[in-house]
Length: 294
Ligand SMILES: [Zn+2]
Image 1: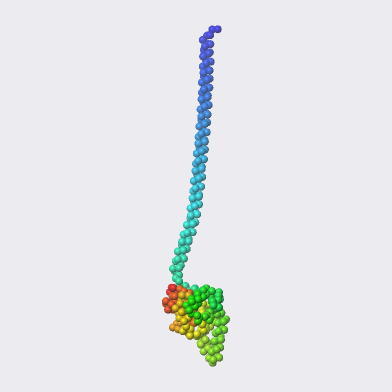
Image 2: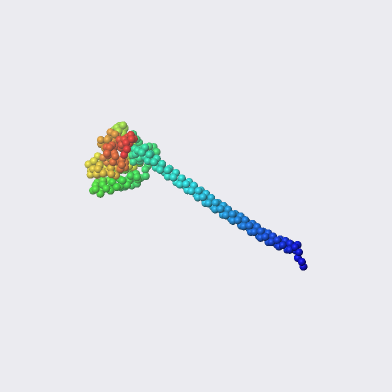
Protein backbone atom coordinates (compact mmCIF):
# COMPACT_ATOMS: atom_id res chain seq x y z
CA UNK A 1 0.00 0.00 0.00
CA UNK A 2 1.33 3.22 -1.14
CA UNK A 3 1.47 5.63 1.46
CA UNK A 4 0.95 8.91 -0.08
CA UNK A 5 1.76 12.20 1.31
CA UNK A 6 -1.60 12.61 2.83
CA UNK A 7 -1.11 9.44 4.79
CA UNK A 8 2.01 10.75 6.35
CA UNK A 9 0.35 13.96 6.72
CA UNK A 10 -2.40 12.23 8.54
CA UNK A 11 0.09 10.37 10.73
CA UNK A 12 1.94 13.57 11.58
CA UNK A 13 -1.32 15.25 12.27
CA UNK A 14 -2.35 12.47 14.55
CA UNK A 15 1.01 12.56 16.25
CA UNK A 16 0.82 16.27 16.59
CA UNK A 17 -2.59 15.86 18.03
CA UNK A 18 -1.28 13.21 20.30
CA UNK A 19 1.55 15.42 21.33
CA UNK A 20 -0.78 18.26 21.69
CA UNK A 21 -3.04 16.11 23.75
CA UNK A 22 -0.10 14.99 25.82
CA UNK A 23 1.09 18.52 26.12
CA UNK A 24 -2.34 19.74 27.05
CA UNK A 25 -2.56 16.84 29.48
CA UNK A 26 0.70 17.87 30.95
CA UNK A 27 -0.52 21.41 30.91
CA UNK A 28 -3.72 20.36 32.52
CA UNK A 29 -1.76 18.40 35.11
CA UNK A 30 0.46 21.37 35.66
CA UNK A 31 -2.60 23.56 35.86
CA UNK A 32 -4.15 21.20 38.38
CA UNK A 33 -0.92 21.06 40.25
CA UNK A 34 -0.83 24.84 40.19
CA UNK A 35 -4.45 24.99 41.38
CA UNK A 36 -3.59 22.49 44.06
CA UNK A 37 -0.62 24.61 44.98
CA UNK A 38 -2.79 27.69 45.07
CA UNK A 39 -5.32 25.82 47.20
CA UNK A 40 -2.52 24.63 49.46
CA UNK A 41 -1.17 28.14 49.69
CA UNK A 42 -4.62 29.51 50.52
CA UNK A 43 -5.01 26.92 53.21
CA UNK A 44 -1.60 27.77 54.62
CA UNK A 45 -2.46 31.46 54.58
CA UNK A 46 -5.78 30.67 56.21
CA UNK A 47 -4.08 28.55 58.86
CA UNK A 48 -1.42 31.19 59.40
CA UNK A 49 -4.09 33.87 59.54
CA UNK A 50 -6.14 31.76 61.95
CA UNK A 51 -3.12 31.11 64.14
CA UNK A 52 -2.31 34.79 63.91
CA UNK A 53 -5.84 35.75 64.90
CA UNK A 54 -5.79 33.19 67.71
CA UNK A 55 -2.45 34.55 68.93
CA UNK A 56 -3.66 38.15 68.68
CA UNK A 57 -6.91 37.24 70.46
CA UNK A 58 -5.03 35.36 73.15
CA UNK A 59 -2.60 38.20 73.63
CA UNK A 60 -5.49 40.69 73.72
CA UNK A 61 -7.40 38.58 76.27
CA UNK A 62 -4.25 38.06 78.33
CA UNK A 63 -3.37 41.75 78.30
CA UNK A 64 -6.96 42.75 79.07
CA UNK A 65 -7.10 40.28 81.93
CA UNK A 66 -3.82 41.57 83.28
CA UNK A 67 -5.00 45.13 82.90
CA UNK A 68 -8.29 44.48 84.65
CA UNK A 69 -6.49 42.62 87.40
CA UNK A 70 -3.94 45.33 87.83
CA UNK A 71 -6.78 47.84 87.98
CA UNK A 72 -8.44 45.69 90.59
CA UNK A 73 -5.20 45.60 92.56
CA UNK A 74 -4.89 49.31 92.22
CA UNK A 75 -8.42 49.66 93.48
CA UNK A 76 -7.60 47.42 96.43
CA UNK A 77 -4.42 49.30 97.14
CA UNK A 78 -6.43 52.47 96.81
CA UNK A 79 -8.83 51.36 99.55
CA UNK A 80 -5.93 50.32 101.76
CA UNK A 81 -4.21 53.62 101.18
CA UNK A 82 -7.37 55.56 101.92
CA UNK A 83 -7.87 53.54 105.12
CA UNK A 84 -4.26 54.21 106.06
CA UNK A 85 -4.57 57.92 105.33
CA UNK A 86 -7.84 58.00 107.28
CA UNK A 87 -6.23 56.26 110.24
CA UNK A 88 -3.22 58.54 110.09
CA UNK A 89 -5.46 61.58 109.96
CA UNK A 90 -7.50 60.23 112.83
CA UNK A 91 -4.32 59.69 114.83
CA UNK A 92 -3.25 63.25 114.05
CA UNK A 93 -6.71 64.47 115.07
CA UNK A 94 -6.43 62.60 118.36
CA UNK A 95 -3.02 64.11 118.99
CA UNK A 96 -4.36 67.52 118.03
CA UNK A 97 -7.32 67.05 120.33
CA UNK A 98 -5.00 66.05 123.15
CA UNK A 99 -2.93 69.16 122.50
CA UNK A 100 -5.96 71.41 122.24
CA UNK A 101 -7.51 69.89 125.31
CA UNK A 102 -4.79 69.95 127.95
CA UNK A 103 -5.10 67.78 130.97
CA UNK A 104 -7.03 70.37 132.92
CA UNK A 105 -10.46 68.98 132.19
CA UNK A 106 -12.13 68.40 135.49
CA UNK A 107 -14.36 65.53 134.54
CA UNK A 108 -12.09 63.34 136.64
CA UNK A 109 -14.08 61.25 139.11
CA UNK A 110 -11.23 61.62 141.58
CA UNK A 111 -11.57 65.40 141.66
CA UNK A 112 -15.27 65.74 142.42
CA UNK A 113 -15.54 68.69 144.75
CA UNK A 114 -18.11 68.31 147.49
CA UNK A 115 -18.62 71.08 150.02
CA UNK A 116 -21.35 73.40 151.29
CA UNK A 117 -21.06 75.51 148.12
CA UNK A 118 -20.85 72.48 145.88
CA UNK A 119 -23.22 69.75 147.08
CA UNK A 120 -23.55 66.45 145.27
CA UNK A 121 -25.87 66.66 142.28
CA UNK A 122 -29.41 65.33 142.72
CA UNK A 123 -28.75 62.52 140.24
CA UNK A 124 -25.52 61.41 141.93
CA UNK A 125 -25.38 57.65 141.89
CA UNK A 126 -23.69 55.70 144.60
CA UNK A 127 -20.25 54.45 143.47
CA UNK A 128 -19.41 50.78 143.31
CA UNK A 129 -18.13 50.00 146.77
CA UNK A 130 -15.79 47.36 148.12
CA UNK A 131 -14.56 46.69 151.63
CA UNK A 132 -11.11 47.77 152.84
CA UNK A 133 -10.41 46.77 156.43
CA UNK A 134 -14.12 46.31 156.97
CA UNK A 135 -15.16 49.71 155.58
CA UNK A 136 -16.75 50.57 152.25
CA UNK A 137 -14.65 52.52 149.76
CA UNK A 138 -14.93 53.41 146.07
CA UNK A 139 -13.82 50.30 144.21
CA UNK A 140 -11.58 52.32 141.85
CA UNK A 141 -9.54 53.74 144.74
CA UNK A 142 -9.75 50.82 147.14
CA UNK A 143 -6.52 49.22 145.89
CA UNK A 144 -4.51 52.35 146.77
CA UNK A 145 -6.08 52.60 150.22
CA UNK A 146 -5.40 48.90 150.87
CA UNK A 147 -1.77 49.32 149.74
CA UNK A 148 -1.29 52.42 151.90
CA UNK A 149 -2.58 50.63 155.01
CA UNK A 150 -0.35 47.65 154.28
CA UNK A 151 2.80 49.75 153.83
CA UNK A 152 2.06 51.84 156.90
CA UNK A 153 1.85 48.69 159.02
CA UNK A 154 4.99 47.33 157.37
CA UNK A 155 6.76 50.49 158.56
CA UNK A 156 5.83 49.58 162.12
CA UNK A 157 2.76 51.79 162.53
CA UNK A 158 0.37 49.51 164.35
CA UNK A 159 -1.81 52.08 166.10
CA UNK A 160 -3.87 52.86 163.02
CA UNK A 161 -7.36 51.93 161.95
CA UNK A 162 -10.01 53.15 159.59
CA UNK A 163 -12.88 54.72 161.50
CA UNK A 164 -15.10 55.93 158.70
CA UNK A 165 -15.17 55.92 154.92
CA UNK A 166 -18.28 55.87 152.75
CA UNK A 167 -21.49 57.24 154.20
CA UNK A 168 -24.81 57.16 152.46
CA UNK A 169 -26.64 60.48 152.34
CA UNK A 170 -29.25 59.01 154.72
CA UNK A 171 -26.56 58.14 157.24
CA UNK A 172 -25.00 61.58 156.82
CA UNK A 173 -28.43 63.09 157.62
CA UNK A 174 -28.64 60.98 160.76
CA UNK A 175 -25.16 62.11 161.91
CA UNK A 176 -25.99 65.72 161.16
CA UNK A 177 -29.32 65.63 163.01
CA UNK A 178 -27.75 63.91 166.01
CA UNK A 179 -25.08 66.62 166.31
CA UNK A 180 -27.67 69.41 165.99
CA UNK A 181 -29.77 67.78 168.72
CA UNK A 182 -26.68 67.43 170.93
CA UNK A 183 -26.02 71.22 170.74
CA UNK A 184 -29.71 72.01 171.14
CA UNK A 185 -29.91 69.89 174.29
CA UNK A 186 -26.86 71.81 175.61
CA UNK A 187 -28.89 75.01 175.34
CA UNK A 188 -27.80 76.34 171.94
CA UNK A 189 -30.29 78.06 169.66
CA UNK A 190 -31.14 76.40 166.34
CA UNK A 191 -28.84 78.83 164.45
CA UNK A 192 -26.01 78.28 166.94
CA UNK A 193 -26.46 74.50 166.80
CA UNK A 194 -26.31 74.52 162.99
CA UNK A 195 -23.27 76.79 162.91
CA UNK A 196 -21.45 74.57 165.40
CA UNK A 197 -22.46 71.35 163.67
CA UNK A 198 -21.36 72.29 160.16
CA UNK A 199 -17.90 73.04 161.49
CA UNK A 200 -17.39 69.29 161.79
CA UNK A 201 -20.28 67.57 160.10
CA UNK A 202 -21.40 68.41 156.64
CA UNK A 203 -25.01 68.61 155.63
CA UNK A 204 -26.24 65.52 153.82
CA UNK A 205 -24.97 65.58 150.21
CA UNK A 206 -22.25 68.05 151.15
CA UNK A 207 -19.80 65.52 152.56
CA UNK A 208 -16.90 63.86 150.80
CA UNK A 209 -17.83 60.75 152.70
CA UNK A 210 -20.86 60.51 150.41
CA UNK A 211 -18.40 60.01 147.51
CA UNK A 212 -16.67 56.97 148.95
CA UNK A 213 -13.27 58.67 148.48
CA UNK A 214 -12.67 59.99 152.02
CA UNK A 215 -11.24 58.17 154.99
CA UNK A 216 -11.23 59.13 158.68
CA UNK A 217 -8.60 57.50 160.87
CA UNK A 218 -8.63 56.37 164.47
CA UNK A 219 -10.69 58.36 166.98
CA UNK A 220 -11.51 61.21 164.62
CA UNK A 221 -10.02 63.83 166.92
CA UNK A 222 -7.29 66.47 166.93
CA UNK A 223 -4.95 64.20 168.88
CA UNK A 224 -4.38 62.22 165.71
CA UNK A 225 -1.97 64.99 164.72
CA UNK A 226 0.47 63.75 167.38
CA UNK A 227 0.55 60.13 166.29
CA UNK A 228 3.23 58.34 164.29
CA UNK A 229 0.50 57.38 161.85
CA UNK A 230 -0.22 61.05 161.12
CA UNK A 231 3.48 61.70 160.64
CA UNK A 232 3.76 58.76 158.26
CA UNK A 233 0.68 59.89 156.30
CA UNK A 234 2.01 63.45 156.02
CA UNK A 235 5.09 62.09 154.28
CA UNK A 236 3.77 59.09 152.34
CA UNK A 237 0.02 59.44 151.68
CA UNK A 238 0.63 61.31 148.42
CA UNK A 239 2.38 58.21 147.05
CA UNK A 240 -0.98 56.43 147.23
CA UNK A 241 -2.98 59.38 145.88
CA UNK A 242 -4.24 60.71 149.23
CA UNK A 243 -4.19 64.29 150.53
CA UNK A 244 -4.98 65.76 153.88
CA UNK A 245 -8.18 67.44 152.89
CA UNK A 246 -8.65 70.09 155.58
CA UNK A 247 -5.30 71.60 156.63
CA UNK A 248 -5.35 74.23 159.34
CA UNK A 249 -3.98 77.00 157.11
CA UNK A 250 -6.64 76.35 154.44
CA UNK A 251 -9.67 76.38 156.76
CA UNK A 252 -10.90 79.68 155.35
CA UNK A 253 -10.87 78.29 151.83
CA UNK A 254 -12.27 74.85 152.59
CA UNK A 255 -14.81 76.18 155.05
CA UNK A 256 -13.95 73.25 157.32
CA UNK A 257 -11.93 73.42 160.53
CA UNK A 258 -8.67 71.54 160.76
CA UNK A 259 -9.23 67.78 160.49
CA UNK A 260 -5.92 65.88 160.75
CA UNK A 261 -7.80 62.55 160.62
CA UNK A 262 -9.66 63.17 157.34
CA UNK A 263 -7.85 62.13 154.14
CA UNK A 264 -9.18 62.30 150.62
CA UNK A 265 -8.30 60.21 147.59
CA UNK A 266 -7.49 62.24 144.43
CA UNK A 267 -5.06 59.94 142.65
CA UNK A 268 -1.28 60.14 142.54
CA UNK A 269 -0.75 62.71 139.79
CA UNK A 270 -3.07 65.13 141.58
CA UNK A 271 -1.74 64.50 145.09
CA UNK A 272 1.82 65.20 143.88
CA UNK A 273 0.80 68.32 141.99
CA UNK A 274 -1.29 69.65 144.85
CA UNK A 275 1.59 69.25 147.26
CA UNK A 276 4.00 70.91 144.82
CA UNK A 277 1.60 73.83 144.41
CA UNK A 278 0.68 73.86 148.12
CA UNK A 279 -3.01 73.93 147.22
CA UNK A 280 -6.08 72.47 148.83
CA UNK A 281 -8.69 70.84 146.56
CA UNK A 282 -10.74 74.04 146.14
CA UNK A 283 -7.63 75.97 145.04
CA UNK A 284 -6.42 73.17 142.82
CA UNK A 285 -9.73 72.88 140.96
CA UNK A 286 -9.79 76.64 140.45
CA UNK A 287 -6.22 76.40 139.16
CA UNK A 288 -7.23 73.68 136.68
CA UNK A 289 -10.32 75.59 135.59
CA UNK A 290 -8.12 78.58 134.85
CA UNK A 291 -5.96 76.53 132.50
CA UNK A 292 -3.44 75.06 134.89
CA UNK A 293 -2.22 71.60 134.04
CA UNK A 294 -0.93 68.66 135.99
ZN1 LIG B 1 -14.12 62.77 157.45
